[in-house]
Image (cartoon, rainbow, N blue to C red; front, side, top):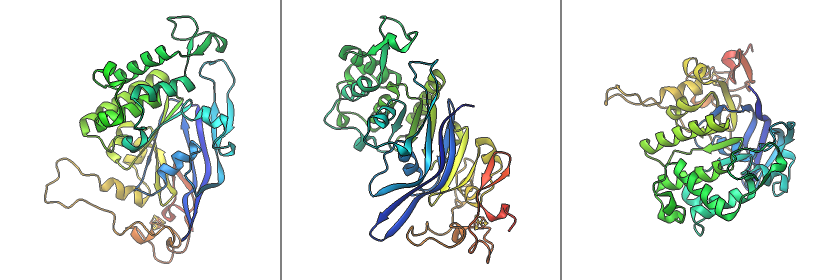
Amino acid sequence: MEPLVEVKNLNVEFDVRDGIVHAVDGVSFTVHRGRTLGVIGESGCGKSITAKTIMQMVPKPGEITSGEVLFHYRDKYDPEGDIEVINITNLDPDGRRIRKIRGGEIGMIFQEPMSSLTPVYTSGTLIGEALHLHRLVPKTVGEEMAQNIKEYRHVTDEEAREISIEMLRKVGIPKPEQRVDSYAHQLSGGQRQRVMIAIALSCRPAMLIADEPTTALDVSIEAQILDLMADLQETVDMAIMFITHDLGVIAEVADEIVVMYMGKQVETADATELYYNPLHPYTRALLKSIPQIGKRSTQRLASIKGMVPDPFNLPSGCVFHPRCPEYMPGKCDRIVPKWTEVEEGHYARCLLYEEV
Ligand code: SF4
């Protein structure tokens, strides 16, 4: 497995009027080329901020206080070229380098397609803008790939329109020749989401960050989008970072899973291992709370007791202790658990697995 993005001990803080919020607290993981990393956790646990940090898009007053995001860059138009390791956290968020990576090398599908698509541009213009900025085509007409970087050129307006129609067709939008001239308000929720996916994928990024990409969609459209992402992943060896709170969806798509709670990474393992052998009490509770077909309708759905704590007033010791079914008094409320490799490649942050 070839690493593409390595996140190392990342910390992001928000200094607001009521105090400092540690939105991302010591998170580390690796996304590999051609593989899917699932990131799960309740709302507000730091999943989206982690993703935005990878794109150098942390909203103000957020700040990366420590840690690294290493991007193993290889020019997709020069596959024989060397890999350059770029520390994204050192780049100017408005600089040329990150603008080339953002969209061109790492595409992102945001949670809310209605507010993420500019209402005054048609879907064709939005896809075309990304293509003009990030996509090259071989100088020889009709070729899919060229021999080296000098044999490529930028796309023309006509080509951008053709590629936009083709992308809309690929994401399953009916009558793409007409929809290419549609504005966001003329599209349904599912179509808007697919336009977002078309924009993100049109430049053939090395990695796609999909932040709750199917939350607003009904299950049939959701299944279509998941199939489409899997097809494109196979075709262009793209890595995917899939962020969701839906454990059913993540079971279908992920190779590896990161579980987050209150900005901290509490468990990481191979997806099958995590589903069959969850170690952290929070992961176990999340898995128990998935509704199951065949259960009697009168049976209560399992839930995690209590509420997510106030980020300005976090519990002492393990932050999950007030809600944990395996809470050990005098221990869990006093000692901060360490990140521990419990089994090979299976990590957890819990005192049950530490010799204290
Ligand atoms: Fe539960 Fe204690 Fe483990 Fe925290 S450290 S998850 S409170 S058992």
